[in-house]
Amino acid sequence: MDTDILALREQFLNKDFDEKEFTIDSNVTSEYARLCGETDPKFLDPDHPDFQAPPTFIACLSGGRSLPDGFPRFGFGMDAGKGVECLIPIKPDQTITGKTHLHDIYTKTGRSGRMVFVVARIEFYDKQRQHLANSDSRMVMREKTK
Image 1 (cartoon, helix red, strand yellow):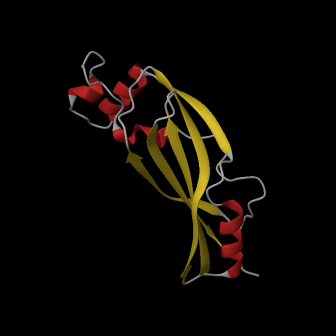
Image 2 (tube, helix red, strand yellow):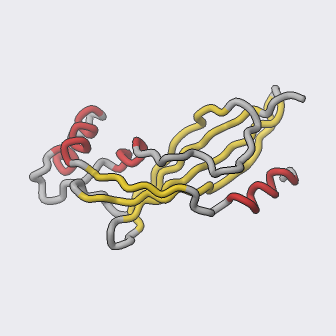
Image 3 (tube, helix red, strand yellow):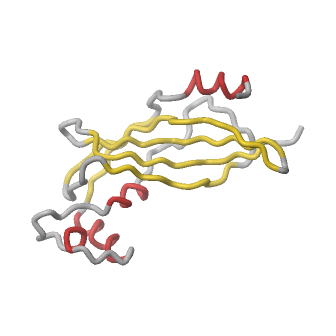
């Protein structure tokens, strides 16, 4: 791995740089489920005994910042994908806390040169500090040519 990327990993990985509270509204989650084509009543019907937000719902929640202060810009950044990991169902009509940190930094070399990938992870917790889910946002920056 390139020495500059190793230094960035040492400086920035796994250090929280943003925290935000989210109120999970049952009307919003059920409408989200409907728009996604969901058919399971536990995602659509607020009166269902196991009503919960669809697993992918957390991907639409974002923190206040996508990168920590002082993180260098290598070039123009583009979305490189999302990923979610659900650990415990998220029940609507509660407030959860999202804590953001950089989960990974790596490079790939393409035809046009080096590309730097950054994975920002938001970990979601309930009021009892139970870890509910993770939402990863990947960004790719094509390095500026010198």
